[in-house]
Image (cartoon, rainbow, N blue to C red; front, side, top):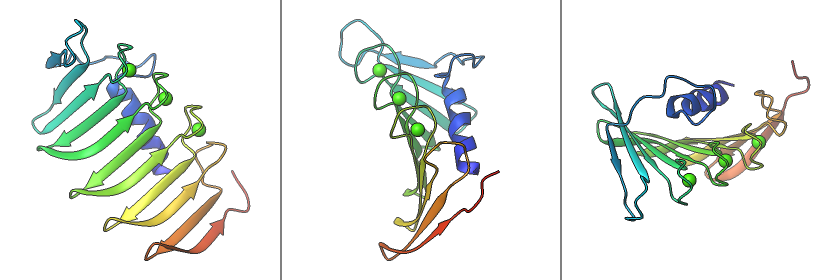
Length: 155
Ligand SMILES: [Ca+2]
Ligand SMILES: [Ca+2]
Ligand SMILES: [Ca+2]
């Protein structure tokens, strides 16, 4: 599943995954809550992309990462359980939500991908064992589940 591969790639870019290198140096850092420790890192890569990473719980590790392209929000990544691994990725296209990738059991492997079209939920792919291939896909029309397709065999 392409979405899952992208999920892992973005972990590498941010440098949250151990063994990923080189980690780029931030172009700016901030101490927003004035406790003497950095809690926001800003990375500018290339001409148009900006990555804004926040530490919301004060453990020194980024857990909320926003990516902008030409000032427009394109991605929000969250580490909701603060284990250093991203477990929720929201992607935006033309200002609207286009995809949500979730690792709700926090094992590092996403098991749900939601695809949005024109701001409405269109498809949900379920991969409960996180192997990277969806076991079933739900299709939605006008906000209603209309079809579920199950994969009969897995590679
Ligand atoms: Ca944190
Ligand atoms: Ca996590
Ligand atoms: Ca998982």
